[in-house]
Image (cartoon, rainbow, N blue to C red; front, side, top):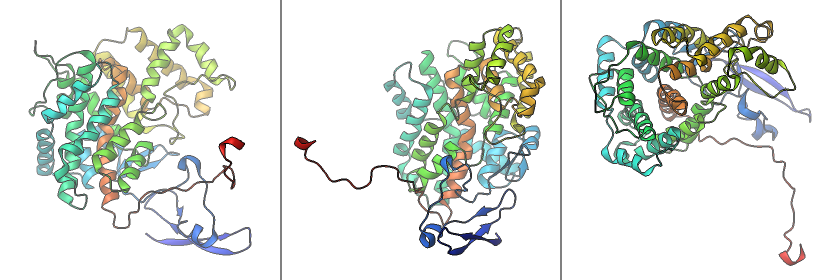
Length: 430
């Protein structure tokens, strides 16, 4: 990594040179590591919107140009030609696998899908109506109690085992949470099914009758998981890195990431899309709600439009849009009022000058929520599905962070705005 210098002049007139770090793509970054030591000041960046917290070679995003790449591969190419398991291998190991490597990795994931029976018993302690994300976070956190003998972060083999277990077992945990909610018996995984087929089987099969997996449903899930696999230093990924930087076991770090993802401003966005559609209620009301969205004095927002990072368009939305229409046509649900409403809203927004001017195009959350709903997945499970796809990104970032010999525990600073020194006053004199 080459370095240039950025000259800084302090209010007192003193000068210092700060190195400029250059990545292989994207904007340069000013290295401020010496700033406090030499100048006695911090930087202030709420939300870390202009702060690089680490170096990473996993994912690159250019929000202005609508570019998303995993390990240098454009997501459009991976979505068109790859599978989620192959993308998972790429994110974890840095390169696309050979035929033998992919087959071996796929078999490893299939063999790790079962849960310890004690973990299944854990679900019996939850209320029947517990939120699936609460269960997901709790059960993943408990995995450190079952695999404590293989938690040496300095051991590459242990790091591999952790990544394989998270990727393999999270669908089984998610399906168990769903089954508890609907009052059905848990369904064990099947090693003869691929990743997404197995998930559908565990979600929707029942012991009383055979379950036939819809190939379009499995294809749609596989595509969604590819698109959600990683997204650079987002809130949940940064949480995983921060928790893991203390040396905490990786399962607790992933559990922390799941909790961060649960927030409605992060992983809950696709659920908010369905809530919004239900609020609009009917296609005849779209004009009214679009007008509300344009009104600066109205708090109403059209959920699923625009993106904090992508200032032009969300490349994932462009990819998933076609699959959304394919799923609705395949499942013959285009005449369902909610889906008709979604498609009409999409059409209006794509043609409206206000939305075009402000680049408020439908994002991946708009289409993913519609797909999940069409597949029969309840809204309470939407963020869980997001977590399944993102699990490999979390694992890849934890592995990258923990293997970095220059890694430090995360410790942000603050601008203190509380009272200055005050003397204690005895309670009788207050």
